Image (tube, rainbow, N blue to C red):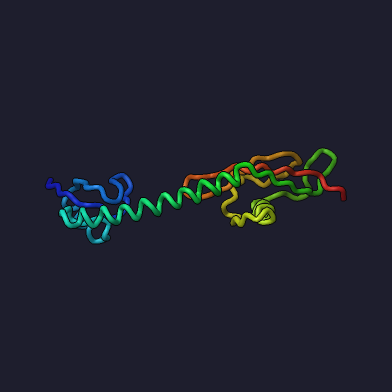
Length: 152
């Protein structure tokens, strides 16, 4: 099986990152990588061009990671409090779901979609509960949600 060297233009899972020169089967390069513009032939001119592009991509990635980390830091120490109707044993008549937690976050000035709130089941008891908030990719933050019994 003939192998050729190609220069990756994008990050390709289980193959390499942008700017890497990798050796792949000729058919894989010809039928998959090259038509999708994920790679180019590894020439000296292409390597120089890709080094400039890789520098820009690395700067963008560093900026994105800084934004993600700052959002995680803000969310990580956050404690939310809500008052809900409950019985004498502490069971809520309703529940606190992802939408309610997203509203609580919005009240604190943190706009978050309810699809980013990770709850296995809605909260149905009074007490302090830990809730995961999806920030980006594999990054999550844990928010403390305290559910108290309301007066009425």
